[in-house]
Length: 149
Image 1 (cartoon, rainbow, N blue to C red):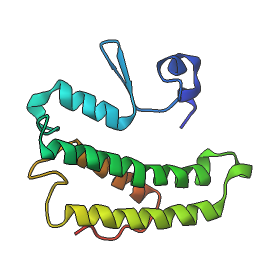
Image 2: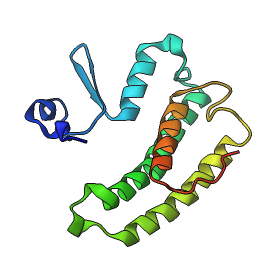
Image 3: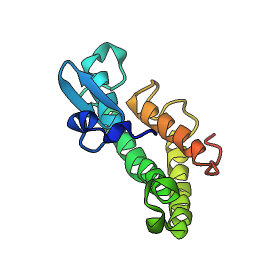
Protein backbone atom coordinates (compact mmCIF):
# COMPACT_ATOMS: atom_id res chain seq x y z
CA UNK A 1 0.00 0.00 0.00
CA UNK A 2 3.00 2.30 0.40
CA UNK A 3 4.69 1.52 -2.91
CA UNK A 4 7.18 -1.05 -1.63
CA UNK A 5 6.30 -3.31 -4.56
CA UNK A 6 7.58 -0.70 -7.00
CA UNK A 7 11.05 -0.41 -5.50
CA UNK A 8 13.84 -1.75 -7.74
CA UNK A 9 14.90 -4.28 -5.08
CA UNK A 10 11.43 -5.83 -5.03
CA UNK A 11 10.97 -5.66 -8.80
CA UNK A 12 14.10 -7.81 -9.13
CA UNK A 13 12.26 -10.49 -7.17
CA UNK A 14 8.87 -10.03 -8.84
CA UNK A 15 8.81 -7.83 -11.94
CA UNK A 16 5.02 -7.62 -11.57
CA UNK A 17 5.47 -5.76 -8.30
CA UNK A 18 2.81 -7.82 -6.53
CA UNK A 19 2.72 -9.76 -3.30
CA UNK A 20 2.93 -12.42 -2.11
CA UNK A 21 6.32 -13.73 -3.10
CA UNK A 22 8.00 -16.74 -1.54
CA UNK A 23 11.76 -17.17 -1.53
CA UNK A 24 12.23 -20.87 -0.84
CA UNK A 25 15.99 -21.26 -0.64
CA UNK A 26 16.57 -19.22 -3.76
CA UNK A 27 13.56 -20.52 -5.67
CA UNK A 28 11.31 -17.51 -6.14
CA UNK A 29 7.63 -18.40 -6.31
CA UNK A 30 5.02 -15.76 -7.15
CA UNK A 31 1.22 -15.95 -7.30
CA UNK A 32 -0.78 -17.06 -4.28
CA UNK A 33 -2.07 -20.32 -5.72
CA UNK A 34 1.38 -21.31 -7.01
CA UNK A 35 2.84 -20.65 -3.56
CA UNK A 36 0.12 -22.78 -1.95
CA UNK A 37 0.67 -25.61 -4.43
CA UNK A 38 4.45 -25.41 -4.04
CA UNK A 39 4.22 -25.68 -0.26
CA UNK A 40 1.58 -28.42 -0.36
CA UNK A 41 3.74 -30.51 -2.68
CA UNK A 42 6.91 -29.76 -0.75
CA UNK A 43 5.23 -31.00 2.43
CA UNK A 44 3.14 -33.99 1.29
CA UNK A 45 2.40 -34.99 4.88
CA UNK A 46 0.14 -31.93 5.02
CA UNK A 47 -2.22 -33.73 2.61
CA UNK A 48 -3.24 -30.34 1.19
CA UNK A 49 -3.06 -31.84 -2.30
CA UNK A 50 -4.72 -35.20 -2.99
CA UNK A 51 -2.55 -38.03 -4.32
CA UNK A 52 -1.31 -37.87 -7.93
CA UNK A 53 -3.55 -39.61 -10.43
CA UNK A 54 -6.72 -39.49 -8.35
CA UNK A 55 -10.07 -37.93 -9.18
CA UNK A 56 -9.66 -35.81 -6.04
CA UNK A 57 -6.41 -34.33 -7.40
CA UNK A 58 -8.21 -33.40 -10.61
CA UNK A 59 -11.09 -31.87 -8.62
CA UNK A 60 -8.59 -29.88 -6.58
CA UNK A 61 -7.04 -28.45 -9.76
CA UNK A 62 -10.51 -27.78 -11.18
CA UNK A 63 -11.65 -25.77 -8.17
CA UNK A 64 -8.41 -23.83 -7.93
CA UNK A 65 -8.72 -22.91 -11.62
CA UNK A 66 -12.40 -22.01 -11.24
CA UNK A 67 -11.81 -19.79 -8.22
CA UNK A 68 -8.91 -17.99 -9.88
CA UNK A 69 -10.57 -17.42 -13.24
CA UNK A 70 -14.21 -16.91 -12.30
CA UNK A 71 -13.99 -15.27 -8.86
CA UNK A 72 -10.51 -13.88 -8.19
CA UNK A 73 -10.10 -12.34 -11.65
CA UNK A 74 -13.48 -10.65 -11.35
CA UNK A 75 -12.59 -9.25 -7.93
CA UNK A 76 -9.36 -7.89 -9.37
CA UNK A 77 -11.34 -6.21 -12.16
CA UNK A 78 -13.58 -4.59 -9.55
CA UNK A 79 -10.57 -3.46 -7.53
CA UNK A 80 -8.82 -2.00 -10.55
CA UNK A 81 -11.87 0.09 -11.40
CA UNK A 82 -12.26 1.23 -7.79
CA UNK A 83 -8.69 2.21 -6.96
CA UNK A 84 -5.82 0.60 -8.88
CA UNK A 85 -6.24 2.17 -12.29
CA UNK A 86 -5.62 5.86 -12.94
CA UNK A 87 -8.88 7.72 -12.27
CA UNK A 88 -9.40 8.56 -15.93
CA UNK A 89 -9.34 4.80 -16.77
CA UNK A 90 -11.86 3.68 -14.15
CA UNK A 91 -15.31 2.74 -15.44
CA UNK A 92 -18.14 2.35 -12.89
CA UNK A 93 -20.16 0.25 -15.38
CA UNK A 94 -17.38 -2.36 -15.36
CA UNK A 95 -17.81 -2.72 -11.59
CA UNK A 96 -21.53 -3.44 -11.99
CA UNK A 97 -20.91 -5.98 -14.74
CA UNK A 98 -18.12 -7.71 -12.80
CA UNK A 99 -20.30 -7.89 -9.68
CA UNK A 100 -22.98 -9.61 -11.76
CA UNK A 101 -20.35 -12.09 -13.05
CA UNK A 102 -19.17 -12.73 -9.50
CA UNK A 103 -22.72 -13.43 -8.35
CA UNK A 104 -23.19 -16.04 -11.08
CA UNK A 105 -19.86 -17.71 -10.29
CA UNK A 106 -20.40 -17.78 -6.53
CA UNK A 107 -23.60 -19.74 -7.10
CA UNK A 108 -21.61 -22.35 -9.04
CA UNK A 109 -19.11 -22.58 -6.19
CA UNK A 110 -21.94 -22.96 -3.66
CA UNK A 111 -23.56 -25.70 -5.73
CA UNK A 112 -20.21 -27.48 -6.06
CA UNK A 113 -19.69 -27.36 -2.33
CA UNK A 114 -23.23 -28.49 -1.58
CA UNK A 115 -23.58 -29.75 1.97
CA UNK A 116 -19.93 -30.76 2.26
CA UNK A 117 -17.43 -29.02 4.51
CA UNK A 118 -14.69 -29.07 1.82
CA UNK A 119 -14.54 -28.56 -1.93
CA UNK A 120 -12.64 -31.79 -2.58
CA UNK A 121 -13.71 -35.00 -0.94
CA UNK A 122 -13.71 -35.15 2.84
CA UNK A 123 -10.54 -33.22 3.60
CA UNK A 124 -9.15 -29.69 3.60
CA UNK A 125 -7.05 -28.93 0.51
CA UNK A 126 -5.35 -26.08 -1.30
CA UNK A 127 -8.65 -25.54 -3.13
CA UNK A 128 -10.24 -24.57 0.19
CA UNK A 129 -7.38 -22.21 0.99
CA UNK A 130 -7.62 -20.46 -2.38
CA UNK A 131 -11.44 -20.28 -2.20
CA UNK A 132 -11.42 -19.07 1.41
CA UNK A 133 -8.91 -16.35 0.67
CA UNK A 134 -10.90 -15.22 -2.35
CA UNK A 135 -14.15 -15.12 -0.38
CA UNK A 136 -12.49 -13.02 2.32
CA UNK A 137 -11.32 -10.66 -0.39
CA UNK A 138 -14.87 -10.54 -1.77
CA UNK A 139 -16.11 -9.43 1.64
CA UNK A 140 -13.60 -6.59 1.67
CA UNK A 141 -14.91 -5.39 -1.70
CA UNK A 142 -18.33 -5.00 -0.09
CA UNK A 143 -19.98 -7.38 -2.53
CA UNK A 144 -23.17 -9.02 -1.37
CA UNK A 145 -22.34 -12.69 -0.83
CA UNK A 146 -25.20 -15.14 -0.92
CA UNK A 147 -25.00 -17.69 1.88
CA UNK A 148 -22.89 -20.65 0.73
CA UNK A 149 -24.88 -23.10 2.84
